[in-house]
Length: 148
Length: 148
DNA sequence: ATTCATGCAAAGTGTTTGCACTAAT
DNA sequence: ATTAGTGCAAACACTTTGCATGAAT
Image 1 (cartoon, helix red, strand yellow):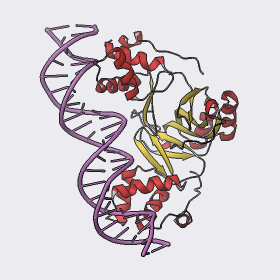
Image 2: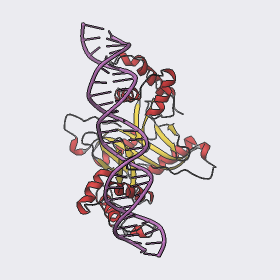
Image 3: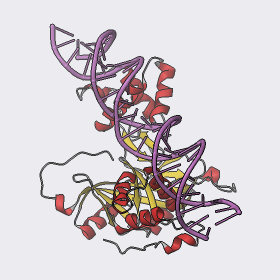
Image 4: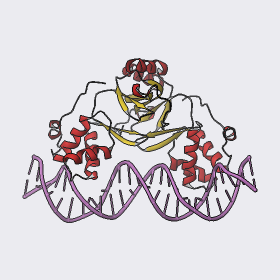
């Protein structure tokens, strides 16, 4: 939905991070999808290629990579999710099928300035989450209820 | 920061919920603060008034009350938080002191419409989170890093 | 009297950590 | 050679659940 500003494995060494197989594959897996996977989903995918990787290593690397800004970590009702798309964008969660879609950023700068002015706070970044029904789920009747 | 649209304990009976002491106090505690407490923080507060209440009861009621729309449940990096202010509003999280402030809603309808038009999705609701430094923390030097 | 809500304890989740070993630098 | 990174298992924190008792209707 949005062009990706990818951060390749090359970026690792420059930051004093060793380029290990698990780390490389973990980053690749997260960057290769736009499904905003949870840790255990990344784990499952990584193990298809590196069967002996441990869940702990996946967690450790996701944390490290997020700290380095190579991917984004976001918490929602179902726990942690990871996003290889580090470009500014918003999210839309379908309340029926549960999928999370990237959507173009909506009025970012303007909104942030408005808040800064009203509150006197310094706004460094923000996050916008939309909830509703995706195109595929519109037209169907029953809706699965989810926490917001 | 925002006027509260409170939902008093009276609202309970009308929804087929029994008005028990634990339930009444839990709702009061959440509605009496704007600190967006986590479950265990509510638990601690409730026990000051009702020392024998169990943590399970707090969790069960927070879930029930949120399902009835009497309070809001939101997930962030530190787990579940509850908000007695059910009026439309956004949040500002101070990255230094960790406090969460309510801020007036920023361009809600307009933004939602924009996304709906761009994506073809049906937007039912949305959530905006700002991050930065609150007034009290501005001017201080060091900043505590937190997950987004 | 009925049945919803509670307290307790046990069981689940998802995530983190200690440690000895392995591998990248 | 050095030390960051790994796998494993145990520990952890948070949240949910089963069940018998108690309270609101």
